[in-house]
Amino acid sequence: MPRLTLTFDNGPHPETTEGVLRVLDERQLQATFFVVGDELARPGGRATAERARTAGHWIGNHSMTHLVPLGEPGGDDNLDEEIGAAQELLDDLAHPDRLFRPFGGGGHLGPHLLSPSALAYLIDHQYSLALWNCVPRDWEDPTGWVERARQDVANRDWTVLVLHDLPT
Image 1 (cartoon, rainbow, N blue to C red):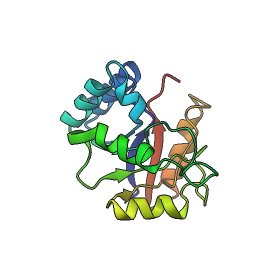
Image 2 (cartoon, helix red, strand yellow):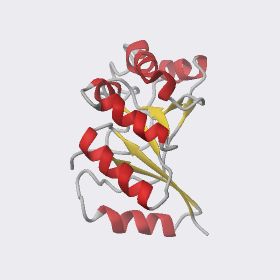
Image 3 (tube, helix red, strand yellow):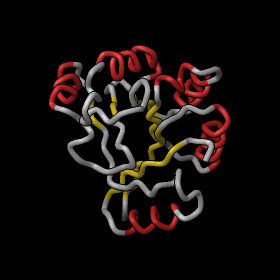
Image 4 (tube, helix red, strand yellow):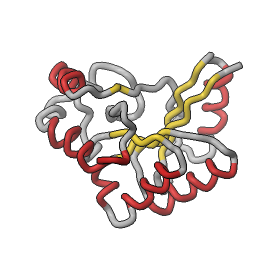
């Protein structure tokens, strides 16, 4: 039987994430939310993330700004700001394993995700790197992504699905 790990990136967005939380609760599903520090700091962001944590969902770090993949030129210039400050902002909301998901720039795996210095930072600060094997591009195709995700799940023993709790 296929296994699925359901994750959501780029929130919290109070309206969108609240809807996601309602659906997960109705279906008794658990997920991991990889939050962006800047979104967490917006009005209503922390309260939304707290509701997710209280409901039993895991919360991980998805950087402070989500602007440049950490393996691209200049992406690792401020690792304390991008990773450390976001983790500090998460505080007690964060999963104890210090989950970190790098910004993928469209969901593609490769050397653009992490520079050697970013990887060393994650190791030195004892983060668990959380990658993926299914990004159905829900932000580009709000209806067609479902079938792509279903096919990926059917074709793998274990799928780590990345969706986005964005207004799209």
